[in-house]
Length: 192
Length: 204
Image (cartoon, rainbow over the protein chains, first blue to last red):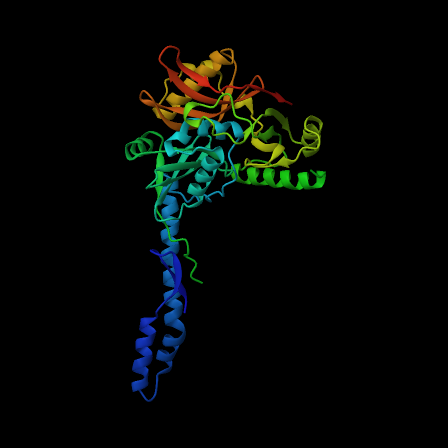
């Protein structure tokens, strides 16, 4: 049976084909199962279910990307970049000197590590993704709802900024800086 | 670093950059090379809540080169930092190392408006307001003329209030072949200004 994605746990779990089970139980009552019913039970029903679920989840994924990345209605698939260090040492230390006190980090490596982990945990239940489309390119943003830490990465996967953003400041960024929230999608939507 | 390994690594970096930014991979790129050294000394510039935080600091020297040739880049690094390990990302590495990164593809300055034109335009929206301030400060602090041109490589808000705006950090390149990091701030006495400026000559 095809697995499906449990959005709550983000785990692939085996789909329970209730329809097929019911039909098989009915089949036992009949002495001569019909060929059409047999084909439906064994091939068509599981196939249709797989196709339907794949298309539905796929569309959800695509709509999520389109709605929040391109306002003119055209399709634009933007891959989420992997973390690849900071843009430069100057930028890292400037951010540490300015923002590390917001988190209470004493050492540079603690700050760097926390910013990296925050970015990489974008799929966790306490994180939310945003995208900022500027003239200089897209900025990929992850904000932890609890710690309020924001990690901002450019298209090359380089960290450009890391600091705390409260709710009021978040609303201001959504309004002024054009941050767009990206809906959380299950990480395991491969069904076939 | 072995020349072949360097070629392989930097080619990957160029290919990735070209793919992401939809530019040609055989064109010129601005590369930054930074000499980094982690020591156990304390920084004299450590600010109050960070006092004593440094178990490691770095002393660095940054150079920028504009080239399309990987051989030229390799020779440039070898000449300036002989026998120094080369890394392609930030991170902790005991002792000395050279960090190499692509800043941007070569800028076609013929398509860039002059400072005069940018300053004459009435900014529309938040981002244009901030970018105009950056250009205005860069003109003053980097001693650029009205006819000069400057390109912001990137800039990002810093969540530090500056009246109705926020502080902004980023990098810029000027037509006069200078590259610098900046942090736009507001001071009660001197008004808006760019902090952390360190203009580096671009070797072409």
